Image 1 (tube, helix red, strand yellow):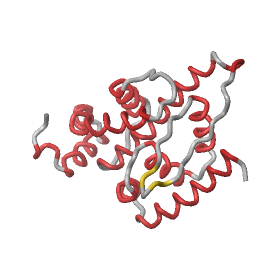
Image 2: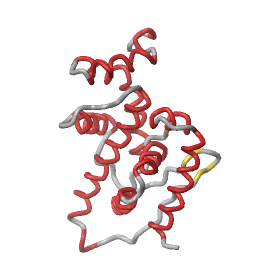
Image 3: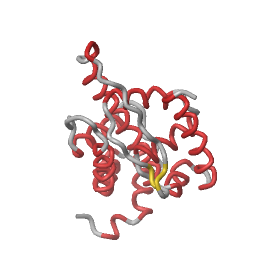
Length: 194
């Protein structure tokens, strides 16, 4: 377990800056420092799986990390921003897995079940999601405005607070709350009709 001085908030930001400048070892250190946060995020994501789990938290963290660092350079500026990017990558990994699982079952489709994006005392409900529901949600999210999509990803998939989302996106808490209300209303119409 890393010591407290190594996990100071500024340390992750410094390491991410070094990683953006090409220091691959710095990115590995970031992973070590926030690995517990990433596993908690993955556990939160996987708790919603409706059917038998096909991924474990460790595997989801590793697949999301590979997705984040492959190809384009990682542009995270701080811990919150990195976790927001990780939530997005985990969503992509889960959607990819859901597509593979449902591809073989196309002719015997299960009954569609609605999902909820509502708040319960300030916390987003995390329903069990069947692969078909996750795919429907993903399609709807792709049609949202980019900032609203990022807010939904951070909040619904990442379990982040308004303050954490605001810090990750560089906006105010009020903007996050306002955009969340708009995004939730739009998604409800897109998923359930008027």
